[in-house]
Image (cartoon, rainbow, N blue to C red; front, side, top):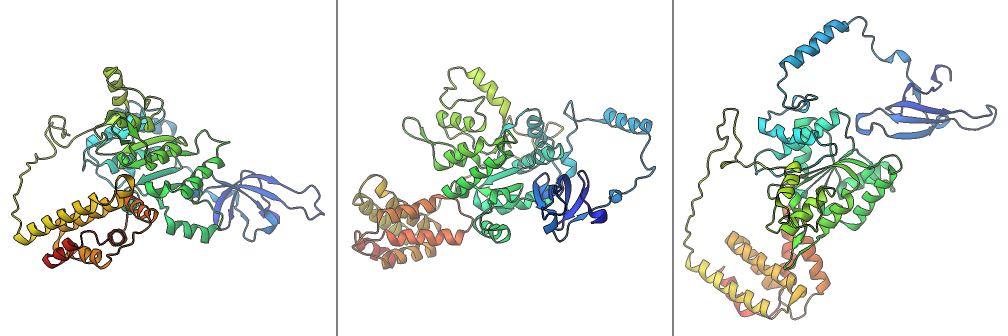
Length: 478
């Protein structure tokens, strides 16, 4: 093969990608048909560090690059004295709020950040292992703050594999923000993307290993098959690394908070999912504008998912308030737009104007009053005769949708009530079928049209002859 003989440490172009040759295993007997095994390490940005082993004789485009591939810089380097002078000049003029290494992320992104947005970055970089709750008010730029932390970790070589979990409706927005503002390529993993991965890489490909930076929705990961695939992907590198993933970012993290009950709290499917996958990440960042749901038990359990070393979901914050507040301040950043603790500019002035809420009284028409009265009577009759407990939940859900449509617009309500009336029947649908529809509606949606169709399906499935007289009047009034 002449100059195309692979050697450890050389660069090669294989399958139209750049690789570093790590190891070469030549056959013991040249005369035999034994194969030459070459271990390669990817140098591509999107797959950097991943390794594969190929059979040299079977590769059709294996090219060992010449040693002079890198450009000759000649005498263009500054002398050590000039370079030291440059570094010292930077240090003398440096106004960084960090005592150590300078933050570079703001200069690598197409952003014009505010001074207060640097606080979460500083707090995150001061942690040996990041466990950060960014609970800023709506509109203060939590996305920018998280993006700068991600960029800084990548620049410092402290993160490579990143999972960004958000509501399905925000996936495209997050992807666009990371690409346009920070130049970071994130792949959205959903059902359509998995189909593309399987078509491109084979039916047995694990989608969570196909890209180092991934965006997915909570409800997609919590599906049993998808969660199993994710946990299986974590086993691949378990022998080489303490954690399989570097960074987990959860937007609207309060959606995974344990649900409060009368006596304590209950873990939802989202809570269980986040607990299961969270242990496989070195760093974690939770984003939410509403970190507390009013129940201290749920809030402590929420903090335990973020930092289990500092918080225990069974503890009572009231027992030692000072100690709890100290631990909370260490991991949480919370700023408001207005008020005494609102964010201020460099001159100490409030950055956001005060907001005054003015209530507007609305006088409904006679038809609107009559429609609301008839609907309330219909709902009371249906719910009172529908049974109790979990079996009655689909009916209550459907009645809530009807009332929302009435308060939304006359046309939306008319269309829904007509559909409901047209499907009146004596027989009841299977409780399991109704539960499946409600479970689908409980999930986050990125397509409003499909969600509306599902709501119409529930409205149709819950229609019975009970209360038919009210429905006929409702149709005529609507």
